[in-house]
Length: 212
Image (cartoon, rainbow, N blue to C red; front, side):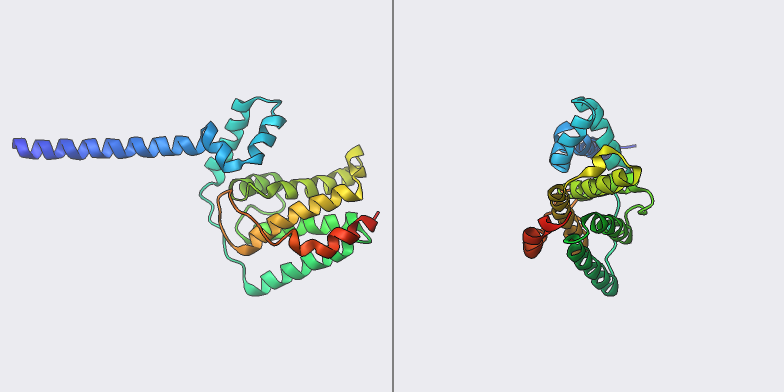
């Protein structure tokens, strides 16, 4: 084998090794502390709080979420399904004025179904579905958690089921941001911003507090 061929082979090997190292560093950045903070935003802090301030444990959990769900590709919604979901949200919003808890149940079910239609885990697997949503819609997923918590704690008869109307209204507002994100059809990998949710709640903001 000539010296020229050997040199070419060495250059190729060095290039492959360098590329692999770059990919490894990139992957580590996506699941490392600073990368996770950027990706998850407020969800990062909430996860640390759930782990009693243990950032390492929180990062392990969030890193596992990215590993499991990071490659998920969201499916587009069919026009007919989109219209149906929008109509159901409008109905839940109107229902909130007189029956806030029932409206919360409607929204909880609706968010789960829309997420499932977009390609996220099935609504029956809430924890898994939530984890996947947190990877791709980290900015707004907390609203879904708040709504689901009110619904499930009420069903279990725990003290948290006594959430006030104002608290439920705020949860609905946050949930609307996630709903808008999912309806917009964009895969933003945790940096989405549902801009129309709170503005479209004008009448709701003024009237919802009348519910009980």
